[in-house]
Amino acid sequence: MNKGAFTESPVESAVICRAVWGKLISCDLQVKDAERFVTKSL
Image (cartoon, rainbow, N blue to C red):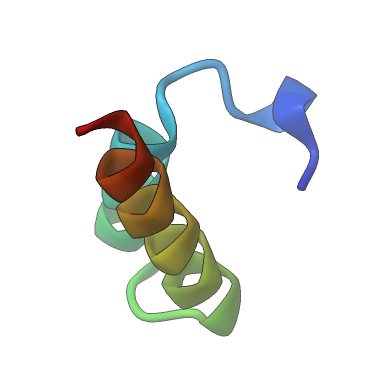
């Protein structure tokens, strides 16, 4: 994943991505990454 493209946290990036682009495959993958990030952070 290109970190430079996403300055927010993974979760915020996924939410923004979905809000702006709708359900693109790349956004779905990013949401999965965000969920892993959150799970790891807990």
